[in-house]
Image (cartoon, rainbow, N blue to C red; front, side, top):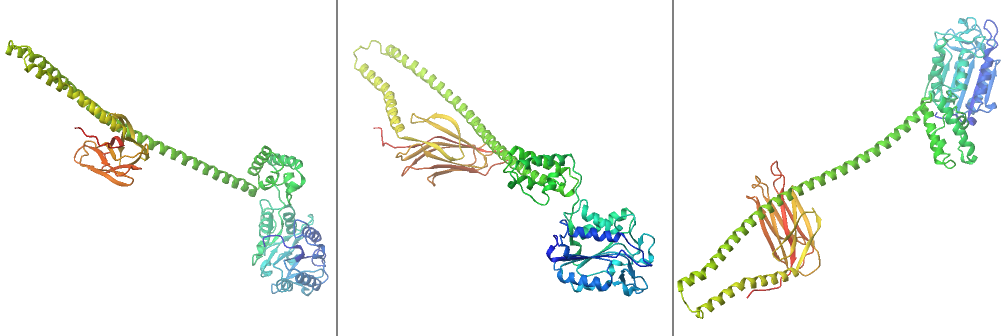
Length: 594
């Protein structure tokens, strides 16, 4: 059973014998036992039985009267049945248990109640799901003043299949009925546990939790220790609500005080009431989170947050283990949320750091390539300066030689006439030869101007974005970009025309280079137009390859792709360089020099 029995389908029979004839002693406290148990079983904290369903038999005259009452209750009960007996207990010579009535004693067992008959009624005649037998009796022949004798193996004698049996004493101890106390020792401890509660016990007190509490309490006070026997989950039969409440601490009092003010300010229909609502407001119990959440629609957020802060402090400091467990469960939930948030934040930071590291790596590669290109340009500039100096020296020598020829001719010829026919011919030829370079320059400039009119530049579209190494002057007298890649493994970049115009040529200069000591590695490169390969090549056995790209096109391409890869990537071969100078699409005008 996991809940309280159904009051309409449950019954109880309370049997108590306080008046005895000699030689048995009177047990005045037994009458109080019956009154206390009847009040509890008919009260709201227990089975809530109707008075007519809780039959009390004080000092029954005969065994038949007891068995008739038990038989009637057994026939009516379908959910739970409780049978209680308090009085003297007797043993037959064979060791059978008898419950002593008023005129019973060891020599007149036929006037006592044979427990086997009572057990038969409960076990065989009753169809209730839960059956409880509680015996507060002993063997009177061993009694001293104020004591009740205890039969050996009393619980074993009371074994009923599917029920729970609890007895007041064991076979080696005697039960007590002190005249100075209101109840017998066993039943008094039982009623205290049922009416005042069990510290740190469950919300609903079952037979097992009550028994363990009684065993600790009676043993601590030096009184007889009870016994129990349970069959078929009999130890889980619920006897009542646990009414124990620890003394509220300052945190619980502050929480209850704030809670009372909040409830008084809230509309009555908005407050959730349950069986413990009054105890929450008094501070006897710490109101759970659900109770505070029920006020969410009637309180401002800041006041609701204060209530939850006070609630958590009251739960954390509560002496009740179950209440503390609620606090720590909430703490675990909050910690899990914080951990998940921290994990998300950590992953975001890690992703940003990874992206930043990748950007730094790419920038480092681009800077390395730019340095290489700057060194190469400086070397080329040095070579160009040397060539210009040589040309200047040759020009100066030629001019000096040209200026010296007339005087030499004059010295050789002497007084040749000024109007000699040879002089005009030589002057005209010199003038004609002097004008040829100028004419060629003009013609070349015109051709270059026409050529530049038909050029379409390429712009970056997708893939690995190249680094820019400035603009260069190309043979068409225009300016074009220089794209630079520093490639660790492979690279693929897509360009697109800057304008949609009819072109029939793809031009540009491609330079592939590898570091010194990596000439045994092979670099493969290719250029594709709209996904179709148009040019390709490889570099191996040397440090650099320069290729002039001049491709005739059947139609204007939409995408121009350049990709390259190599079999390098070692300690000395970290990357190779790729430079595409002045990539452009051009128109051919069919000009020819005549």
